[in-house]
Length: 199
Image 1: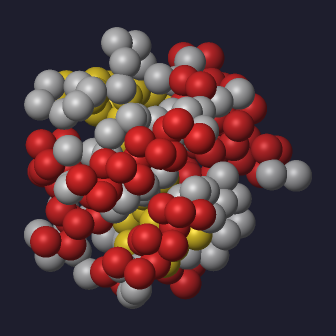
Image 2: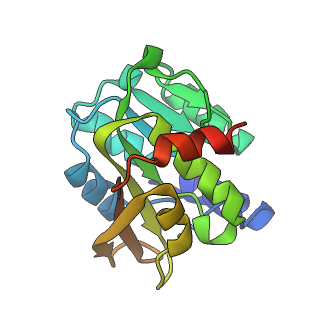
């Protein structure tokens, strides 16, 4: 990512630090590590908090078809940039996926999330997770990025949704250093919880 993308991230963070997870845009080392974990064959793919599209850029360079990518970004300045840069991808400005139609009903193979979950209310975090897992096929994973020393999601939220998390890596070359966690289902009760959250 270049100076322009870093400037967009910095301005977004200044304007709303709870919405933008990091002062700088995602670095190449972190994008490459995510692309090592989420392969082009793991399509379709959803990215929450897509920002300047660093993960999309790396994944597309490795062969992910652009039309198999959904980029979710609330910030209008980022969303417009993504629409111009990735015209064949689906770009949506929603906080949680809910019943949003993606990929003509096909379930996604993975979600990448760089939203600042630690700064969001517990109910909103629950809605984001439940909505995302409602769009994931069985056995699929939710990759959560963190930019601090602690896991960014409270364990009680995962327990209530029937989810478990494992820390995969810390990318120290990123600015700031970033941790990667994989969240998966352990309970069949998630779909029921998702229905309750979206009533």
